[in-house]
Image (cartoon, rainbow, N blue to C red):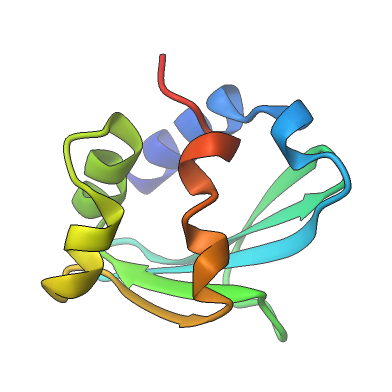
Length: 103
């Protein structure tokens, strides 16, 4: 499963939205282990495992991520209801949907 969601992210990535960015999004999936997205000036690399110093860390299930990316789940609501936990630069998390716009 996890690779599928992450491959979708790769294909939906909008390099223009990521111009000038140098950020690491760490994901801890309750059902798929840890992965991180390394975004540097319009380029995206997805790695398995943990980054030493991520900009923001997000904990959730892969279904929650899928829902947020599809627009079925509001990220703020997920955060408020505890479906999504975030530490670090939490405001960065709000950029996810512009970095990975829907179909």
